[in-house]
Length: 206
Image 1 (cartoon, helix red, strand yellow):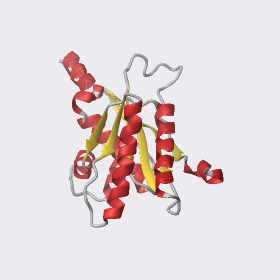
Image 2 (cartoon, one colour):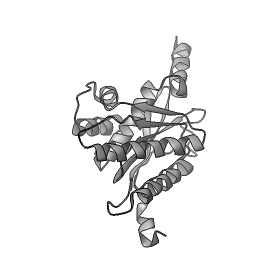
Image 3 (cartoon, one colour):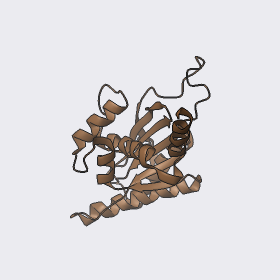
Image 4 (cartoon, one colour):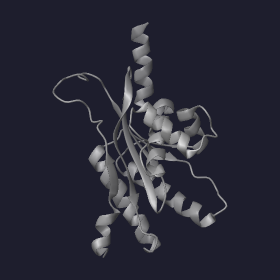
């Protein structure tokens, strides 16, 4: 049905070193929690996956975007996003999925498409039995930069700094997705095993 266009709809991934360490055993016995952040959108749906563990800095596993062409039928664009997010979820098997909470904007057509993409992300996670949490843009900005009014450039800069990257993930949708994952890693609450691991780690240190 999709022809050659279907191949171009898979996630554009900027691969990053960040998989758990191998035979050197430097992370042996450490329980990492994997979080996938999704910055929903019809044209570009950002996806960022990070690992975190108590007593260890978070690290980037993969980041990219799922793209759909604007001239494709709307229903087929949603199907393409579902397929792209399904591939990311199956391949990287996150423990939790963080999705940006969508608010009404001036452009109702844009916000409608964004909300539908967010719903697709939640559906894919639910299909795999993965907990989903929604974070507001201001919550994410505050968690990453300390200010709920930070702009995209500031968020991207802090994402790169926290994860020790040479530059922020691109496009901005990808950086925002990583920021969502970091926000959840730090503020995930009861569905986030990272929070429990941190508490256990601190208790041992006492």
